[in-house]
Image 1 (spheres, rainbow, N blue to C red):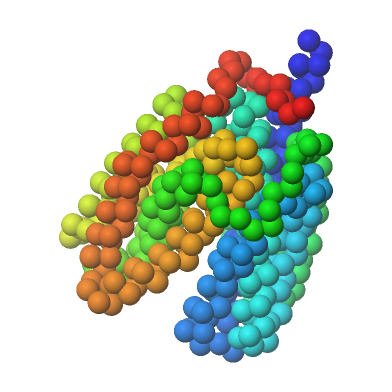
Image 2 (image 1 turned 180 degrees about the vertical axis):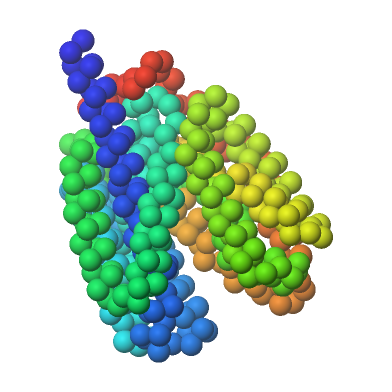
Length: 403
């Protein structure tokens, strides 16, 4: 009995630790995003060149994410996460140091590669904690990422307002976040591969199950990227609102996503992944229809808020399902992450290109069509619901099935 109680405490502690890791990961993103204008000026790049450079984080992540599983196998999950997270937090310094376009592209490639590898490692550990607890926590973990991003962006906004040099700001931020991340990693689960377990390949195509799950994530991330980057433009150009009201729309969208993620685990535990994603798809479609048909800013803002609510928990549930879809969770998670990163890379440009050829209304019509895919494809997440044990009681844990 004592051993069971100790194991429960260990798993609960690991849950809080991995939540802190998600927050640290998000804080790096928020810190970087707020200083992009400073970085653009320092590197002396045009808007078009900056757009090119900002594609490199996704490219770096896509290339490097398949390596995360092999690194975890070689060093163990805890040590691997500690190293990869430190690499990610320290890479925050690089973009602000870039003096020209080429250096900025290289810095952002490294920045994205470290982001992707640490992303895979922390999601794999989050899935393992969720499995041992027997209830959903992935939505809440991604909510912690959003909270970290908000904190990082708030600090970055203050630094920008004070006119602080981004090199100094990011160096201090990287130092603080590295210490916080290193401390949090001391309490995550220290998973080790079985003695007879072969290491995963350095690069491999994701399993078919991950491709199907990734398709669900693609639809959600496409809608998220389109809304984040184009909601303010939509209100400003289509509905001729003030710049302040347009910006408030984007803030509202982000806020509804964060709140839905933090509260989403209770919904998932009550209704399951499939029904939650299907209901989210219906909300997202309803929101998209309101955006497309909006003749008043309040209607469009309501539509974007509904889309935020509808897609908020989809990506966390995709990672959770991928981690339970086969014998190699890291490889499956890396496959899903690669697809979602690609969607995030493609969405803003696709919306802009389609809007240039037609209109923003048609662009968000495409977003609405893709949101339908959430309801149609949600069934591929069923395996995760079936395989996850349902253990009653607060903080309940299941025995480690590993030999």
